[in-house]
Length: 173
Image (cartoon, rainbow, N blue to C red; front, side):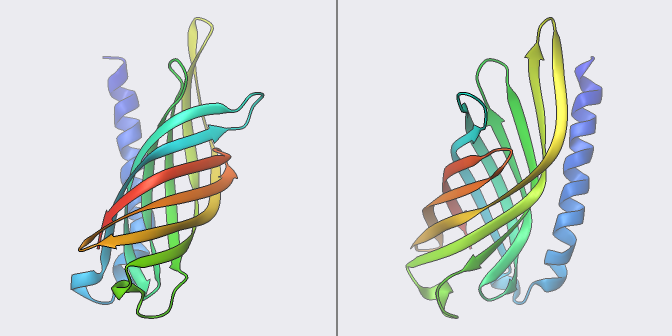
């Protein structure tokens, strides 16, 4: 029963982040049939230390089109580190397609990505558990390889908490 308040607090944080980060997206959407981009991802995140602390990541995002080449919205990432080290990232993320205005019809679309928000860390320390939250920012590049209505592609980011990220993204547009 001690975990119920933690789960409720986490759920409240997720709802608030989605509402705050998602509100501008709804008003900026242009066309109903192509206004939302839904993505899932899995990969690697490295937190700076000596040596780097490796984490497996899994996440999801929903972004709305603001302009034909620009999208923004909330992103949530779960990171599993060594032992019982667990982290969550709650981010507002924006992407900018690097190809021309007809990028939605191209098979290969390179893009730039930027995000900001916070991470929540929980890790065992001695006989107890340490929990903290701090700001998170990152930026990087990726590419979408369209396979019909779906796409797949690599994405690489550098930032603060975590320092390095490499993931494979799958999405639908």
